[in-house]
Image (cartoon, rainbow, N blue to C red; front, side, top):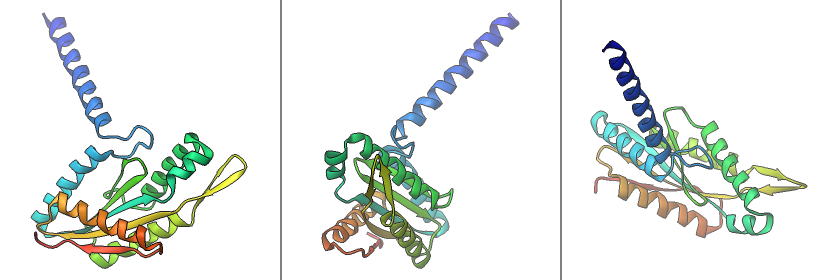
Length: 191
């Protein structure tokens, strides 16, 4: 009887481990290992709940790789995949462990700087912008420069995920259309 109970307990533990692994896979981008859109949305909701409870601020930045399609068309998908992975490495290597980095899909990334006041958060996003836009990757005999457009939205208190994401996205596209390396910020206020 004791042996049966031990076997049952082991099976339950193995089942729990499989469930945990599947949950983790469902929130992770396979190529980069970053959070995917689903995982990021979950983390964003939790961060905004914390901001509400503790009167915290933060910055949400959207990043879009400029002319990524032409990189894939010119050098192939292997080069494009390399650039996506390296972009993720640069972003995660230059934020705190408490911040969130995600590949939302395609050539779009997001960074959530939690517990960051507006000025500090914007200067940290500007550093990410500078690091990413001054990088080129060696692929075969060529160096492929990275160009990315950044847009940011500040949040505090009663911010909601969807309006905040729309504002960061709008700021990023405003930057992309301006064709200048300016960081655009749209403040998130109580909606």
